[in-house]
Length: 178
Image (cartoon, rainbow, N blue to C red; front, side):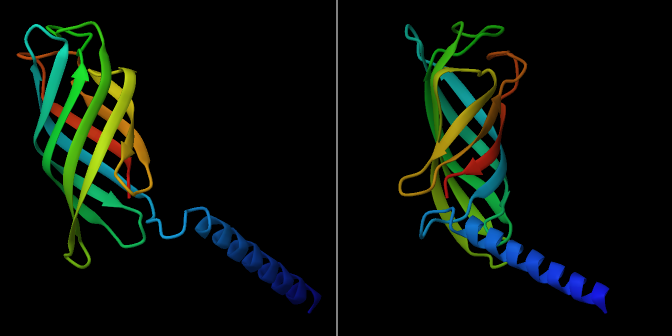
């Protein structure tokens, strides 16, 4: 009987600690804020160098992936549009400059719930201020007006080849502003 009472008390203490931990985790987000949304999104980004300047413009031609972890299930992500800019692009084969500065990419993404079929559209801005490691993989912040910020990694032209060589493929892995 003594063993049973000890196990029961241990279980009650563990349950209380779990409840307190859960309460602490729930209160970590600001009131009314949505839970983080973890995403992996692949896309095709076409870059264009503006002649006689170091300005580079980006257009997302297609893209999609999946997102999860907000407590509402999984979402299919479909990029509806995207444009961006940077000062320079390099280093790499046939790249217009030796470095990329102030990389920014604005995306409009449709998120379709796999459980309900409901679609919501979000606008996200991926920023890598200062010198960015693209071509290659760089850390980005992800913002959207009125939402909790996110962050992640953006990989683009990882083999350091600029047009006409290389691939237009890009990949984002991280948390979007939600």
